[in-house]
Length: 195
View (cartoon, rainbow, N blue to C red):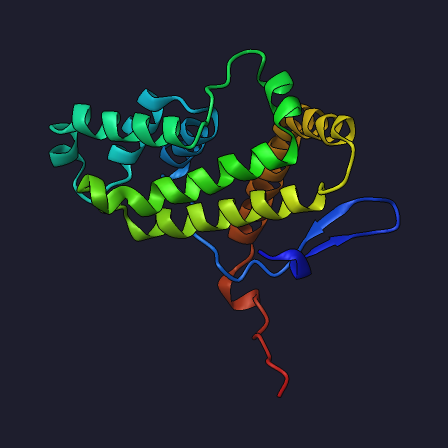
């Protein structure tokens, strides 16, 4: 993701294009969401457990949980990332796009500093964190110079509509999978590539 891959149409709808760096998320969603949430809201315990879960040797890392947690807490404190609570919308509004970018950069830095903690993250999670960070940074850049109330309103709309949109996309995928399963293999036309 970069600004050239973010389009806005005449109606003001956002279109994200060119998803060349993709990761298969089956079985990886919850640890990835826990890591993302832990880093963005500065929940040290959730962040610690998520990093351990997505490491290549979670059992060995679990034995060092206290040490890992302390190092993560120091990093969040040094970066001045305040924990978010039920008043998260107000905190994010006050921080504005600059604060969102700081949280996104911390997300990436935490993933890249794991080797100092003796953790090696599985490759698919590194790709995923890079994509998410780039997306958040790009969105933050779009709001540069925009009044904070507008950015806050968009954030609230996105948070409130995301569950319904995610469910709709999921059901659309399930429906497509079922349709694909009912069509005999020989009925699929060959794919032709133009040269």
